[in-house]
Length: 544
Image 1 (cartoon, rainbow, N blue to C red):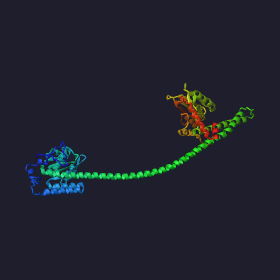
Image 2 (image 1 turned 90 degrees about the vertical axis):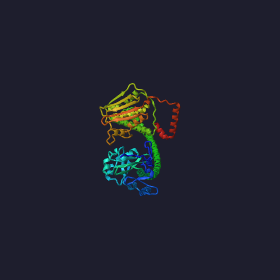
Image 3 (image 1 turned 180 degrees about the vertical axis):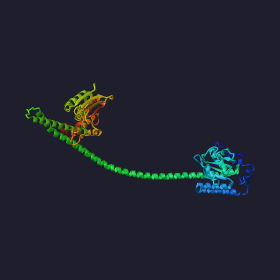
């Protein structure tokens, strides 16, 4: 028995260039088409519907189609529609056994097959779509009807023949159900228990019921899409409501923050005004104190110096000479502390200015070493100088830079035990910057102690049994004097390994800043205006 594969065109199977379609009536045997619409009878013989002679099975098919349409219109579950549709086909087209297979991710899954054996259905469940995969798998793969008139001999059933024959199936006609976009979504098939060729009436049943299957699938898809849209809309609405609530909460928080910020601004303004007033009082106090202290100190230092030199006569008692020396040294030390405190106050108030002038590094370092030779000798230390030759002339405030170096050398000598070494170095690095370095072999410091040492009035040795004297202003003032000249001071140290203090002056210090006469005059006028606004006593004190 040969197999035919009629090509049909309907609203569910779109014609394409590689799917040439012909009218299903072309396959109706001669005599059947002339008699009218024919359908295959239960015994396989063609029967005729003559004019004026209604047929019970035709009426049953029409009633079944109306029933299916009603179920679809009422929105009944798709599975219920499939079950009822296959029951109607099995009754109308007996002894045919109908099946609906659904396509999902390139596999076929059972949609409905009420009269096919469960064993056979399980065997083909999830089969991969492809060529020569039975009638249904091939129909989906090729997107055209596939007729296997005899499963026992059809090559497309080679891998599934045993399952079909074991279920008593010998013929299978399958029609792919396509969307408007040409996507195969299902198959509708008729099985027979004997080899059989389809007639025009058979294709009428298959095509009419397949249209209903497609309608049920599309409606289910549309409902699923609608449910997804509704769910998305509900989620979006919920999210929008939550977002609105968050925005309301954020707005309330921002309003509260604005209120707090407004109050904080008022508080900060008041605190700033108080701090400015306190700073002015501090500056005025320091200026007044410097005036009140310097006047008697100058007398003490001056008269003790006269007595120390015995300019007005000899001091017969040796103890008096010691007393006078102590008075002179103590007064000088106190004056030094007062000057340091005033310098720090001026720097913090932004009133200290630098006056750049040409400076020879060789001469500057030599002067610093000479000043510190006596303290080094008293501490039994080796004091050395290593200055590269030649070094360029730099333009800095010589007094401030010299004071910074003396402070560093003084600290190095103070914290280095007898037999140790202190060295002053100067050189120019490859970037053109000037380096000044004070190295010692003293007690050294930890990281925390170095940070502490750079804070005003703070000392590493800060307990009641202090071993080293000092006001705690040496390093902070040195750092401030260097930074006033756009330089940096960096400490490197380790406990028990000494300390290295490095001053870096940028290469810009090698160039003299030339100011015009107008700029100098403008600066003088500005200075006079500021001085005129100050209290006369404060003005006199700072001039001292």
